[in-house]
Each structure stands twice: as structure tokens, then as C-alpha cells.
Image (cartoon, rainbow, N blue to C red):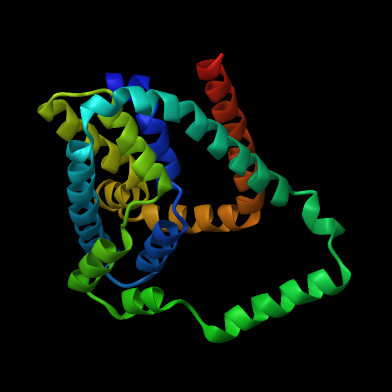
Length: 232
């Protein structure tokens, strides 16, 4: 229970909100035999993520717990401030006020990206097999900031070997939910799942900016409050 109590799995949820993972999942869902491609990507992602996670957790020395407790509030405050800045920059009221040269530059930039086509990893997925998605998943699933902070908090609880392994596995199960949920749907509801995925994509495309703003704002405030509580 210690990793859950010190907030490790909260960072698993933030790590799950990965644009690359969302994009890869979306591309694979649109291709033929999506279940096979999702399984390949998931296995490759788990191989990289679990292996690196176990190495990181067991490499952290428990004797450094005092220093970690001093660093945790500062880390929370820093991340909280950064998220508030992000929330300010992407606030929904910002977009309508933009105009003139700034709006024109953004429009040209967007058109340039459309002309270049999708990234190379998306093209690889579109042409690939389960073996290809395994390789892509293994290469793209590298530790991000949320993943490293979550592992840091797991190690900070000084768990036993079995508890550490279980915590890393559970962290990865949560983090890779974007892959696992469609697979569960394809197994138990193969006809309904593709339609549900399309509805979700349409809804998300219209609400992504608002969701990102609210998520960054709420998490940023919570991190700052927790950091101040630790300090005081």
C-alpha cells in the first residue's frame, strides 16, 4: 500500500496521457487486424517499460530516503508551477483573442505540418505487422518525467522485492491503459468497440484543449498544495 499512499500511481495516470501512445493506438485501431497490432505494441512497450522500471527501482539506494524527502516538496512545487503555466498558455479563452500575424503564423505552421504528412512512426505502423508494432512499441516507450517520478516514489517507500515488482507491474498496467482498454473491448465486444472508438475520437478532437487546460490546472494546484504542506 505504501506506493499508493505516497502518490506513485497518480503519476501512472499522468504517464498514460501520452500523445505518442494515443496517436499510435488511434492509428492501429484504424488499420486491418487492429487487435493483432495492439497486442504487438503492448508486448513491446511492456518489455521496455517494465525492464527499465525494475532496473531504476532496484538501483535507487534506500539510504537516500532523507534526501528524497527533502527533494519531493521542491519537485512537487516545480511541477505544479510548470503545469499552471501550461494551463495558462492553453486556456480556452486564449484562442479567440489571437489574431493578425500570430494567427497567420499558426495557420501556416499547421498547413506545413499537413503537407509533410504523418510522422515516420505512424507510417511504419500503417504498413506494419504485429512484429513491426512490437519493435515500435519497444522503441517509443521510453521513461518520461511522470514515469521516473512515479518510480522514485515507489523506491522511496522501501518496498520488499515482491512488492517492488508488483508495484512496477501495476504502474505499467495503469500507464498502458490506452492499449489495454481497446483490446478488452475487441475481445468482449468486437462489434461495438470500433464504433465507440470513433465516437470517442470525435469527442476528444473537439474537447482536447479544454481537457488539457482543466487537467493541468487541477494537477498543478494539487502539487503546489502538497509541496507547501510538506514544507510547512
